[in-house]
Amino acid sequence: MAPVTRRTFFKRMAMAGVTGLLTPASLVKAAEPIGPARPTPAQLAWQDAEVGVIFHFDLPVAAGVVAPNNRVKKRLDPAKYHPTELDTDQWLEAARAAGARYAVFTATHFNGFLQWQSDLYPYGVKQSSWRNGRGDVVADFINSCHKYDIKPGLYLSTHRNAYWTVWGHYVDWGAGRGTPRQAAFNRVAQQMTAELCSRYGPLLEIWYDAGVKTPAEGGPDVLPVVEKYQPEIVFYHNKRRADHRWIGNENGYAGQPCWATMPYTIDELSHNSALWRPHLLHGVPGGGAWSPGMVDVPLRGANGVHSWFWQPDQAHGLHPEEDLVRMYDQSVGRNCNFVIGAVINPQGLVPAPDVRRLEAFGEAIRRRFRHPVSETNGSGSMVTLGLPRSERIDQAVLQEDISLGERVREYSLEGRTAPDTWKTLASGECMGHKAILHFNSTEVSGVRLRISEYDAEPRIRRLAVFRTE
Image (cartoon, rainbow, N blue to C red; front, side, top):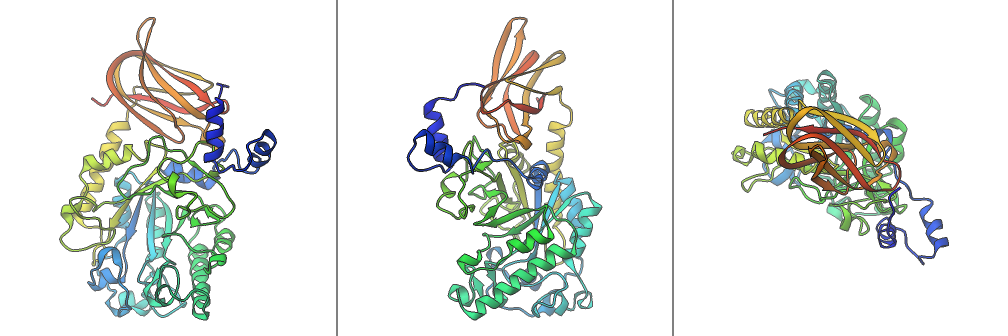
């Protein structure tokens, strides 16, 4: 193992959340319960999916009530929910074209409208005229996910629900914590969770926007419900469990480096916590909580537009293809997932310009990574890749076997430019699930990955080089 300096050791312990007197005995005692962090099978599946699309739709859009990102604080007539062309196959076809391997649907958003068959309260598709009150968008969405071989996830809001006057997690527009009405909403939130987790088969993810409060905070006790019905799921998130973290911005980039691990305490596993917030962009090496970054951005997020929900005359806000490709490099290529927000129009479709942009993005990524010049895998501090012949390369993809945790701390990629000459092409700290490296086009006859610092024997899942110019 490459040596770790005393300074580096103490810095890591502090970032990982180990506190107290830094004597050898206290360090051992403090470190034992927190590490090394490793992903669950569900987290591995989520990280392997790499690109997701989240589809945003709610009653206000269908009713023509426009508010920034669906912040409509009033009940609407469910009869106004009548998306005449709603087609979840069209949504998922667009997601597949973008290269997404999972998708998420807003089963209930800020307005509190239930887009599945439910009797929890009279405000949902069951009370609408759409499909004679028998429609179930959640079921349609998940069936389409299966059809297009995309893993399904569901979003529900417990921090805003206009029907229940919940805003800021509590009823009475945030003032009702601890009241009988809050207790009633908490029971409904638990029942919503049970219905969504028990009726539709395995889910990759359940997403509580802005987190869900715990019972200790006066919120619903949803975590045991999720774990009962969906034991192999990514949970996002409350203070007790955060299987991935928000990266801290909606602009399409993670930090460099960006570790999958974060500081650990028993009840601060949230991007809302003072412990985590300073580390959202970069994570911490050797942290006790495995919570990789999620980089989310609305597709309509350019030219002064930042819309997760459809609004008229905003097609000019579509991110250009080249921006989306750059975001992919700065998210997936920095050990994170990239989640693109797609709007659904009042008719129930992804608008045609948005579909074309998703298709162009997906094709650009496939074109870049379809044909590696050469690739290999291996273990140890040096992994060598031979080339069939001398060739120019300008890009590399590196992946650790993260089922064992993040072991690599520093590395360099070198190319053989002459029989006895190796040139450094790129270097970095965090590799994790995936690192995408760009460098000047260089003609090489071989490549080697030199790992200069690591916490345990490195296991390299993939070393691949490409020529894109």
